[in-house]
Image (cartoon, rainbow, N blue to C red):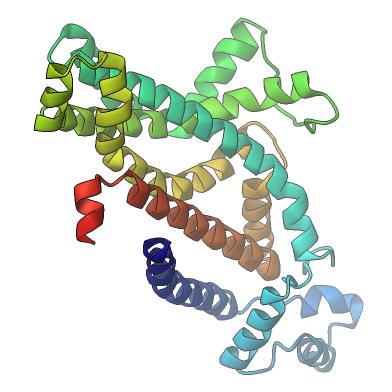
Length: 319
């Protein structure tokens, strides 16, 4: 318990400054853009006086740091402001769209983790054999494929040629689970290939190293079943590099969601941020960036906790 509390404390010392710095940069970039909704809100009455009045009402005439602290206070209470484009609450807009992206990213993560673990385990157990070399070659090629290329290829094969899956759109899971799965499986697969390839390669490396350790040889001599040795001993001690890779994949998945949601015409979190950036809707762009920052930091905290739990007992006792 004390070690867990120490981990949380040390993690907070890193996460909190990173969050403050990231949100400050996000806000300053929005302020430096010089964009303002005053001209569009005033319409035909867009006189310099009217524009100045609207800017004053929105607080855009205040110093940047004062505006940042005001925005930060509202943000911590759950208020991300209102859209300049339609006046809707940014928090509500993000909440409506985030569920779509979360479903795609969650399925992509499950696919990436399961396939990466299976392929990495098979390659490690068959080290040096043709299947090991084949998996290594395939994962090396797959990791170089951009999600938009994979997305287009999947649409051509499964929608245009085979007519098995719809190529665009989205319906909630509660409305039609079957159609929901058909609509998200292709974007999820497109996003899952890169994590799967990296997890497989890193897990293979970790397992090969673990399988050569004395405690594995000792477990084999004691007559333990090979499956038990692999799952209970080698996998726990060799999974560290693969788990660490996951911490770097969440930003890539969120970034890839912008592309895949555009290609598959899915009104998710990524498409909201892209459309808002094109319209110059600064509050929505800032809100989506803040949510992305929080998600990345939270996931990295989970990864750090998992890595600590996976540490061999000898290393944990030395901490």
